[in-house]
Length: 237
Image (cartoon, rainbow, N blue to C red; front, side, top):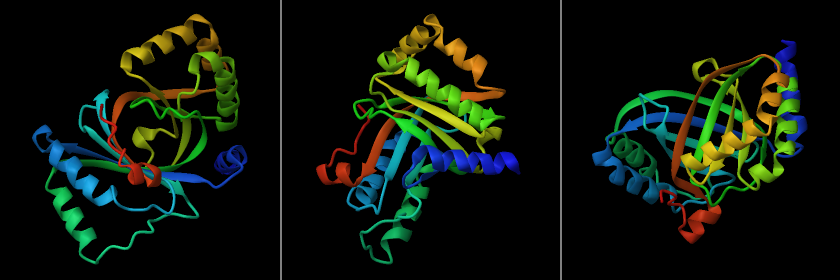
């Protein structure tokens, strides 16, 4: 119980602002249906105004054997929803049509953003490490030190630490994500932080952590108010 309370104390003290929450679902969409699936989402999500946050559709490139699509909705927990009014038929029609392109569905999970930095808007590739963290406070302290020691290496790439509050994926309590130009660029960054010794220092100082698994995925769509207004939500290439 103490660790549970400690985790939520850390989450709110680090952000010091409106708390960002998220939910994620995994699906399998056959490649022959992918363009139709994306077009359907464009027509539904590409014209709405969110109360906060947005929605992303990612393609698993490396590390996922069962599913190839990850859909995540994120936003302020005190301002969640959409401003756009839709007819009573639009929602049910979208969900029915979308289900026709989904050949299999995985577990869903939800959580809250503990810490993030950087922009990464020019990146469409991301690696995410799923972790089971025994001492969240010790982990966060070591994580922030690691980031500070690699400011020049990481530059303005997007880096995020999240905590799972519902449906922990494969037992993970947290995950860390980092954006990049592509998978090979991620490998170059990895090599650099191990070469300068900061990665090993982080691993040794973060406390007891079980590495569950990690994946690389590529962003296909990112819908939010700014992108929808300028019609720049397509992130595939």
